[in-house]
Amino acid sequence: MKKPLIVIPTYNEVENVRKLLPVLLDLSLKADILVVDDNSPDGTGDAVLSFGDTGRVHLLGRPRKSGLGQAYIAGFGWALEREEYDPIIQMDADFSHNPEKVSELVSALKDHDVTIGSRYCSGVNVVNWPLSRLLLSWFANRYTKLITGLPVEDATGGFKAFRREALSKLDLADIKSDGYSFQIEVTYKLHKAGCSIGEVPIVFVDRHAGTSKMTKSIVWEAVWMVWHLRFPWLF
Image (cartoon, rainbow, N blue to C red):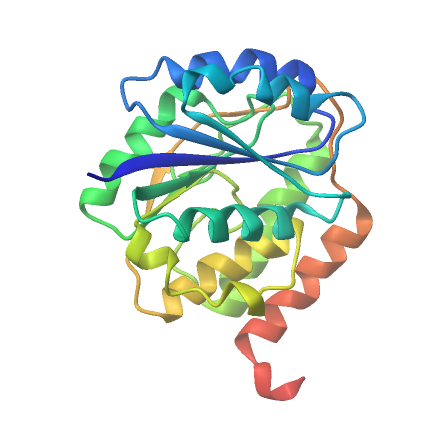
């Protein structure tokens, strides 16, 4: 019998993990949880292990900080190696993704292969971001849609649910990008593979604790990635 799996990448998220995992465990969805931790020095991994007696929380430890994209790839690979998991959900640890919306993302998979928790499919629904960050995100999505033709409003969003069959269409070893561009690359490749992609409106609230992992290099990677995706023969 299949059961959902929630994949959460972490680096120095001990405070958030201690609060988030009990909330996810209490959801009616009864999903298992996989935390992919990049050897956080603040003890995030130990906090995850303290939930081991539930039988539903798993830790995939990596030796060093290697980027959001590679953390998700490791988590997706772990999930696909275990046939009992379907669907597979990805979300952040910092409460910017409302845990109560997980069930809605999964329900929307009745009509789609992939669902995105979208900040922009019903206006602009972002709370506590400075205007510069909001404009960067909004224009990044307009730019991505223009260049790639992706039929979604929030290609850079990191709150997603996948049918197992859809996720298995990805060549995980071929995905090298990180951050914004990782989200774009995964969505674009699944779209090109013929997957139906739906969007569920969410309100995105900036992180409760910890620090943002956004850097200028992540932004520039996304700027160039869309051209690589749309016109691969040029590179």
